[in-house]
Every structure is written in C-alpha cells, then in structure tokens.
Amino acid sequence: MVGRREPAPGLFRRLDGWARASLPTVAAALMMIMAAAPVGLPSAVPAIALVSVFFWSVFRPAAMPPPAVFTIGLLQDMLTFAPLGVSVFILLLVHGLAMRWRRQLARQSFLVVWLAFCGFATVAALLGYLLTALLGWTLPPPISGLHLLGLSAGFYPALSFLLTRAHAAIRLAEERP
Amino acid sequence: MIRLSIPLRQALARLSLPVLIAVAFGTMLLGKADTVLVERARMALSDALAPIYSAMSEPIGAVRGVVREGRDLLAMRSENAALREENERLRRWQAAALALEGEVALLRRQLSFTPEGSTSFRTARVVADGGGTYARAVLLATGPDLQVRKGQVALDERGLAGRITEVGSRSARVLLVTDINSRMPVTLENSRARAIMAGTNTARPRLQHWPEGVLPAEGERIVTSSDQNLLPAGLPVGEVRWSASGAPEIELYARLDRMDLLRIFDVGLAGILPPEAVARPEPRRGR
Image (tube, rainbow over all chains, first blue to last red; front, side):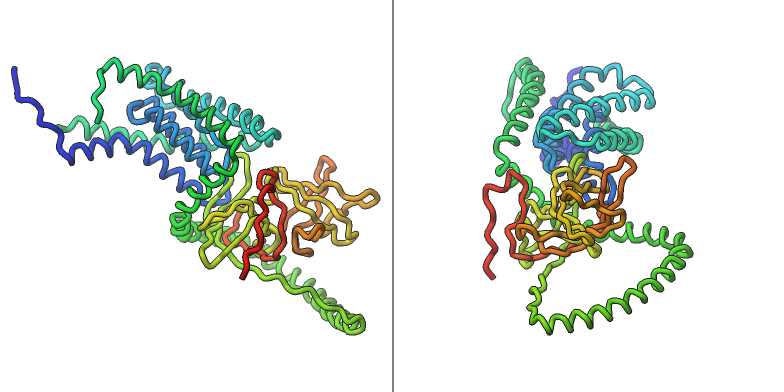
C-alpha cells in the first residue's frame, strides 16, 4: 500500500527526540553532582557514573554514545579531584566492553547482569588504583578501591531499578505514534 | 544537520571509541603536564556548582539533623552519665584554670610581657565533598565578602581540619589533614617536641619525625607548631594514640565526617602549599 510521506518532524517532535536521547547522560550527570554533596560517606560519584555507563551501554547503547561517556568521565574527574583522564579512560573501556558483550548480557536475568557488573566494577577499581598510583607516583591505600567496589556493587540494584523504569518510559514514548 | 552517507556514518561511529580512548590518554598527559590549567578548569566548575550545593546543603543538613537526633535520643542515658562525670572533672579544671590565670597575670606584670595579637577568623560553609576515591578534601562556599587565600588553615569547632589548597571566586578547596598528601608541623604539648603529622587517607594521621630521646606518650595532646611561621601556634589538633602495630597515630579532635562549618584562620603567613603550587605564592591581599 502506498501511503503519504511522513511529514517533516516539527520543532516539538524534534525537541522531544533530543530530550529522549539526552536523558540518560543528563540524568547521570545530575545524579553525580548531587552525590558530591557532603554526607560523611565515601564519595558515591564514581559508583553512579560506573552504573549509569554500564547500564545504558548494555540496554540502550544509542542513548550512551562514546562522546557522552567521555563527558561523564571528565565530569567525574573534575568533581572528585582525581588525576584527570583516569575515569574517562576507565568508563570508555567499560562502555566498549559492555557494548561488545551486550547481546549476551541483555538476555540474561537481573542476577547474572549484576554479577557481570561486579566483574566490571572489580576491573574498574583495579585499573583506577593502578592508574592513580602511576600518575600520582604514590601508593594509595587499597581500602579506597574496595570502597568504590562495594559502593558500585551495592548501588547497582537500586539504580538499575530506576534506570529500567526510565528505559521502559522511553520505549513506550517511542512506540506510541 | 550535516547529511552523511550511511557507510561513512557507520565508520565514524566505529572510530569514535578508539579515538576517544586516545584522547583520554592525552587528557591524562595534559593533567600531568599543565596542572595550572587543570586547576583553573576545576575551580571554574566548582564555582559554577557552588550555588547549587549551597541550596542543597539546607535539606541535606535537615536530613542529617534528624538522623543525628534519633541516634542522640538512643544514647541519651549513657551520655548523661558521662556528661555528669565530665562536668565534675571540668569543675576541678575550672578551679585550676582560675588559679593559673591569676598566676599568669601576676607573672606577666612582672615580665612586662606583650601578648601576641589574637588571630582573626572567618567562617565558611562546607558545601561539597571535594575528594574522591583517593583524596580527602571538602569544598567551601566562599563569596565576595569572604576572601580566602591558599595556605590558610581551616578548623571546625573542635580542632584542626585542613588547609586551603585551591581558591576560586566562589569556592575554595580544603585538603583535609587525613589526605595522603597532607603534612603539618605539630608540637607535642607536654614535651614541646616538634613532629610532623602525615595523612594516610585513613581516619587517623600518623606522627612522624619526632626528635630522638622523646617518645610521644599515649593520650598526649598535639597542637600546631609555628615552626617557619607557617601556621599559628597552639591550635588544637588531637591526641596521640599508639596503634596496634606500634606506630603513633593522632586521634583528631575535629570531626571530619560531619563538618558543616569551618573556621578559616587569617594569620597572614605564606602557608605551606602542595608541591605543584609552590611556584607562585600569593601575597596577602591588602585591606
């Protein structure tokens, strides 16, 4: 059946599309800024960045392109006064690996994905420790790396619950004509 | 939007990850090579975010207050007993202090001693956790009416908390004494021996380089030292605790896990700066 051509997208439709596309990145950045407020706990900023990048890379890679990952990493380094570039590199690596394995990961149950994420977090913490030691030329205490690992693993269920809701909402909005 | 052919767009998408990883390495090198640029960028971001943090600190403070209140209610009974005992002890100290004050006044009159000018301080609000996984620092909201300089020391209501290392126009970063890069000259109060307090990123900094023949005693009070005119002398820091492994550590008076206000001491001294900032000491602003 031959139909009419779809009309050119108007301003509001385009704005809507942009908002949908940028929601994951903007939400991650906002959460990171909020988490930098002082609560007397080890900083949750790296954990939030890691969870967000991993989640969106696995379940909706179009929403988390490499430039967005780069921006989030840069924001994390700026917020946490870490050596510049370390989290950028780690997050890009996590993004790349998660993209490569997403076909296997996205089909698994929540528990398996969580375990896989814990593996990612371990690698990220190790790499972060090594790079920080290398760039600062001092050996930071390993307990901080363990904090990061524990926070990331602990944050994943709660954050992924929220992000799954957001993901479902975006999908719903897209399927609606 | 620029229209690109689909294969070209796919190639670009595949290329962007390796290219950005290379850029990340470049950023690491840049961060090592040009610390001033990176510092300026960071303080610009902190300045931009400082108003947000200031606004957020109210509700966060309220939540923390509720939690603390609940905990305090649970601990009230034992706390009351401890307070009564402490009150008794303080009364005895008060008597001793009054006697000593009289004696000091008497001796001063005899020596015609001119007391040191008391140091002035300003108070700033802690708005954000300026540390990360491997650093211990906080961010202060400062304003046009609250000028701070690098090297000034910051105390909470109980004791020494840290030193200002980076200054923006609306915010300043305080490196806490527990940070692994922090070194502070201190004095053991009883023996008057000088030593260095070195941060270890744990709750208790370590005591180092005390002179031979002096052993820091368990529970001995530690105060700041005015060696080299870097800090005002006699600010309370903490008490000596020997760790299980036999190293002297300092139990800080300052409660670094629940800071909301910090006193910034204006002593007009150059201050100790981290190595990368030594190149440009800042003069005291004229007032």
